[in-house]
Every structure is written in structure tokens, then in C-alpha cells.
Length: 197
Ligand code: HEM
Image (tube, rainbow, N blue to C red):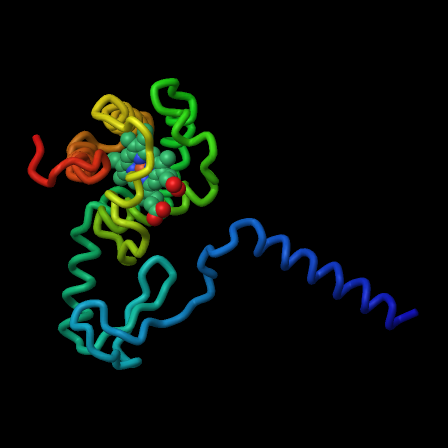
């Protein structure tokens, strides 16, 4: 009796764990692992030189690297916007607008939006100076197979982003910086020559 209870309990646990993993296959686990390569110098880290940022521990090769990294984080647009929770909230609200926008929503019909939201959070976090570099596709490749993608679609996405940030009461000078970064992706997203105006 006791052993069948244990069997049922462990089966239930296995199902729960698998279900959680199936929610987004390929998503990185949140388990805390410390980097082995210094994000500033590229050299192996000294495990005694660390810094915790947003609950994650980062290691560095030298004290000077830690200082440089800390300063970069503190001065970043990412930090000024409110870090990960603020970017996450903005991306969630942004895709509500995008998916309701008749000019562009058809592009997302067959897209796994759970993954898309995660990728956009990661991309924008990195683009705004967050702690984790973007490891996904470059913007040309990511948008290369979207039929008829043009200026009007790009402007619609930018408009939705701007409106999202205004709704969230982000300071105008920060919105301006976000929009400049978004605009800097235009030629890549539209697969136009790098120097197109
Ligand atoms: C500020 C401009 C934009 C940025 C920063 C951006 C960012 C991204 C990122 C980070 C990805 C995921 C790349 C990956 O898979 O690694 C992506 C994919 C995608 N983007 Fe954009 N995007 C922009 C503009 C647009 C526009 C204008 C459209 C269409 C209206 C669009 C539609 C899509 C679609 C449909 C995908 C999924 C493609 C796929 O999985 O096959 N994006 N975008």
C-alpha cells in the first residue's frame, strides 16, 4: 500500500516536472550557474571576484573588470528603465497591442508567442545594455522570411512600442532612447542595405 502510494506520488511529480519543461522546450533553465569566462576580458574568471545583479551571480577575471561591468550596468538604459521586470512588463503589453493591430497581426499567426515574447525580452534587454548578451538570430535572418515586410509594418511595430512605453509612464527621455535603438534595427529588419535611409 505504502509503496503504491510512493509510486503514484512520484509519477505525479514526474508528470508535473515534464509538463513544466514542455511549456517551452529549449528555454534555458533558471538554475543559477556562474560564468566561467569574464564578460569584460574574455579570460577565465577568478571565482572570488563576483557580483550579484538581479539575483544572478557574475564572476570576473580581475577587480577592474568587475568595476567596469558594474559601471556599465548602472549607466545602462536597461537599468534606468527598471531592469528585467520593467522590460518583461513592457514586452507583454507590447505584444497585446501588436496582436490587436490589423496592419501587422497576420505576421504572428503561426508564431509561438510564448517563445516570441521570451526572445523579444532577451533581445531588448541586451540592446538596452542588460547583463546578458543576445544569443539569438541576427535581425536580418530573423525577418528574412516574412513576405512583403516593409516600412509601414516597421512603423506600426515602432508605434506600438512607443505607445506601450507611454502607457507605462516611462520618462520621455528614456522613451526617446528606446526608440532610437529600435530605429537602428530598421535596415536589418527590412533586409535593406545597411546604409539605407
Ligand atoms: C524594432 C523592430 C523589431 C525588433 C527589435 C524585432 C525583434 C525580433 C526578435 C528578437 C525576434 C526573434 C529572433 C530569433 O528567433 O532569434 C523576432 C522575430 C520575429 N519578428 Fe521581429 N522585430 C522587429 C520588427 C518586426 C516587424 C516590423 C515585424 C512584422 C510586422 C516582425 C515580425 C517578427 C516575426 C513574425 C518573428 C518570428 C519569425 C520566426 O520565428 O520565424 N518583427 N523579431
